[in-house]
Length: 237
Image (tube, rainbow, N blue to C red; front, side, top):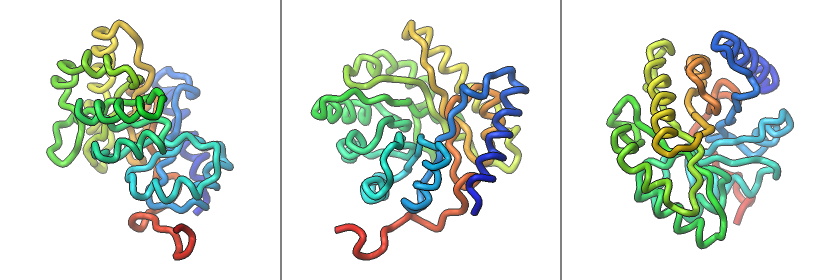
């Protein structure tokens, strides 16, 4: 697995998508999704200046992150249960997957106990898929002021997961709607939201064309996964 070649290809595709959309490629950040990958693979990513890393599962992150080199900005990008809020506040620089007011309140409480401010993205289920988490857009707009009033959370933007399809063009309306919803939220808050986290290995070019600032890329960058990563016996207590 040649991560260097993968990164070069992905960056070229991001650059081309930005050119088509009239955007500056510097406005798009790759979140390297390390789910299922070892600390050694994380080290390789960091050596290529891929410093924003995404994990999907608290249990895996709790074991893996302490074994990884420093210097990474870890993002929680998977579904988070409220009883894991303390771990999330301890482990992650940003939580991209705030999908309910109850979770936001739990994170705010734990961030207050940790005496820190927690950057978050609000996850939105644009496509309305029953199998995915995230706010329905109309509920987010209703609860936005309440979310924004939580003193220890900093809302930086929105995140979504588009339906899987072999034809990325089919999910363009999902990404476009998230961008429009961000603009609606900005109007309500009277302040800019800087981040749109959308697009993964199979559809990130369309997401970039529609305004993504964070693209979450795992398989196309770091290779295939084979289930959750677990440390070799004896490597942790």
